[in-house]
Image (cartoon, rainbow over all chains, first blue to last red; front, side, top):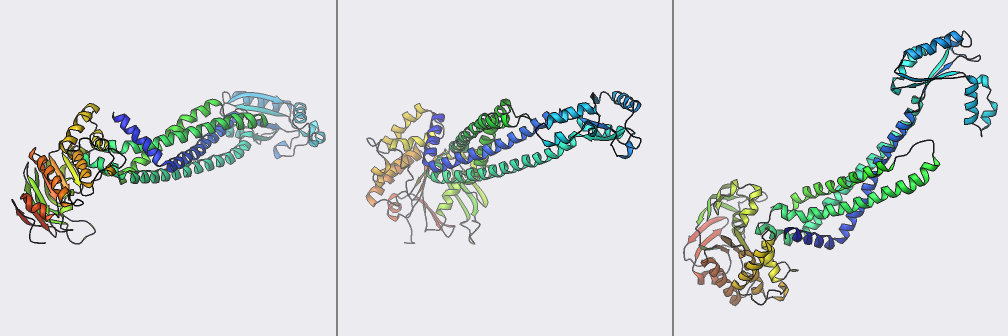
Length: 302
Length: 229
């Protein structure tokens, strides 16, 4: 009885304010889509970090015949120096997870493969590419340990942390993440304002009913419930549309275009997208109900 | 049933208090006319009884409750003991007579069986049998006010507040409404009626409380409308 009455009030309210309801649903759809996008960008950057940081190495380049750094004054690296570096690296386990030695010939070969379609490849010679130790760290942030231990030591030309190169790239992505988040928050704020306004119009258009309800002693809960449900239903429909947009983006933009085009990195999986959907629904409905409640406290006072 | 002790009500935007030092007691089962010119404080008095406003100072007891200490969430339960009727009827135009009356019970969560039983009873009491399924705009003013009274009375309140219930009605129709309010009063319900209708007050010879400029200037049992007009 109660439930049926409340639901019929909700249906009347949604129909009476059809334009406002449509505006509310669309705003929710857009702002929650942006919010979902922000979450997806965030997850994507995390995925890329995992993927890349897992692959980054610290390279210890050894002195070749043509190296000109101070530590290479003694000429090309000697076998004794090479062995000593290897022993020292082994002694740094477990921080050092893997050590892989690459000769200049191997470096040259890899270079040729990487740049096989480029004229650079033809200009390079094996001598120009130094031999190196490729070190994989169990904790890539501990690069400084390797740098202090090996940089400047005789026979070592330079120590390069690939992670530092990546960090620059990720700081750009971090800006992107932040931008997406800011837009999403602004949109959610706009949505809250629209809910407040919708509730005000709804409360005004039903002021006869609510004033009688107050007079005959209906509780706040009973008076406000239809409005709250109205806002929540609008939010849920909007969240549904935003969810469809997320799924469509994953299916056609990520899986259909981005992933096959940019094969050098990983992309977020379905479990991330599916995980975002309930967040959108919850955010939308909670936002709608809280804003509605605050607004109604002002306009439907007992 | 209703007791005001030295009650003063001042609205923030006005220099003069709307009600000043009002002390009055209305017993259970009384029929009281509240008279006075527009702006004399009648509406404020009724709003205070309904706890739509709070007194600035002084104490108000209604139906055994100290209104200054009535917490916000208890107001709905308190209002269920009071029925209210207005000059402009305030019926819902998109509901039938029966639905308008039933609405008052439905929104306080009464079960359907009770609603179905009680609504026809009270519609018979106000003599609207046969018009249950009319819409308000198909009824005369007097009939609409009967629906409003039925709605106010359907939950059997202890107090019925009527704010100029005959203000929009012609004298003949008004007499019918007054007979109805008198009948409701005889069931033991306390009736407080604000009015400008001198003829009715003079004819009914009930207790008259007169306000002027926010002050109580007359409290007379079996009184007449007064000398002001």
